[in-house]
Structure formats: structure tokens, C-alpha cells
Image (tube, rainbow, N blue to C red):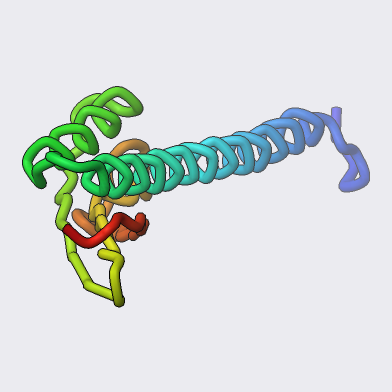
Length: 127
């Protein structure tokens, strides 16, 4: 029994597999983007909290750094981050700037170390 060239038997399986691969890639990319945005938002929150904490009286950089690292650790365990501070005097006020550098996830939790850098500022009265 011969089959003609116009017979499309078996093409539905191939079509289904190709569409499923495309859907899987799109869902994975969407989840990875959501994860990267979560890490970025957590880093911004940690930098803001560290700057606010350091702007309080009698607060040390070590305490503010621990606060930022605790926030990052609570949002994603195993996060390696570098927290640094910069103080500028503007008139009677001090501007406290906290910088957080962490890994931006590219594939799953893996990515380029310290490729995501965010800053946040807070003001305090000059002592």
C-alpha cells in the first residue's frame, strides 16, 4: 500500500511537540524575568533600609550592613552581596548613600557576580 505525498499522517505529533517547546521557552523566560525583578527589588529594598538605618543616630555602618544582608538573605538564601556606604555633607544635613551590588540571575539562580548595582539615599542632621 503506497502513501501519497499529500498524506499528513504523523504531522500532528511533530506540530504539537514544536509548539510545546515554544511554550516551554516562553514560560521559562517569563519566570526568569520575574525572578530577576524579584532580586532587583530586594536589592533596592535592602539598600533603602540600610540607608535609613544608617541615618539614625548612634547607628554604625556595620549594623546597617548586617541589616541589608539580613534582608537580602531573607528574600533569597545564599545571596552574595556587597554593601557599601558614602556620606556627603550638604549644608546642615548629611546625605547617606547605600550601595548594594549583587548577582543578577541569568539562568536560574546563576548569573554574573555583582552585575546588579543599586543605590538608595537618606538624609540626617549633621552632628
